[in-house]
Length: 234
Image 1: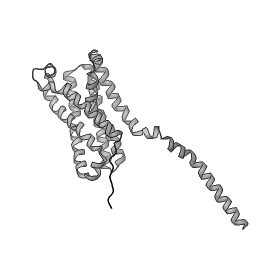
Image 2: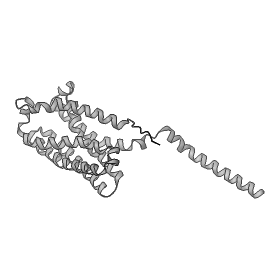
Image 3: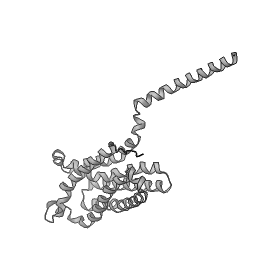
Image 4: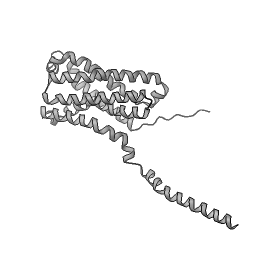
């Protein structure tokens, strides 16, 4: 007798598809011009060219690897591969995150230096806590801190996508600083909301069951007491 497997599409799949399309847009709009040595984008980053190589490669690999780590099917069927990819993700973070600080210091503007420090710190801390949790056997905390780690990598894509909007682009440095700080703040705050949204907004049916539970329990006690009194009278 064979069992038919169903593959449901949930919010996680929709999110990663949308983010993948956003990443493709940023790749074509922002990163491809860097391949041309004569392009204004390439000339703009000429002072930090060699810093951008490890930063870009490490960040890109981290962006690609993290979604695989959130795959329940991959983790259950190929646990060894899941662990290898996890170690590779940590290595990419160790390379990409710290390099952002000298890039911000050399390239400027100075108003973005502390933003780079905050993003680097948040990415490193959340990743190391996730690593410590899994090595301690605390899988639940490991998953939650991985959810907190990935948004710091997403800042690279989300900030550039927002800055590509003509009204934001027209603001110049004010727009850049505002978008970068806003996306970093979101990376700190939104993961906790994602982790706890079920507890914050329980389903109506669950709430109704919770409300009915004391009533059902009291009715059960009353029935048991009635049965006991009938037994005594008999």
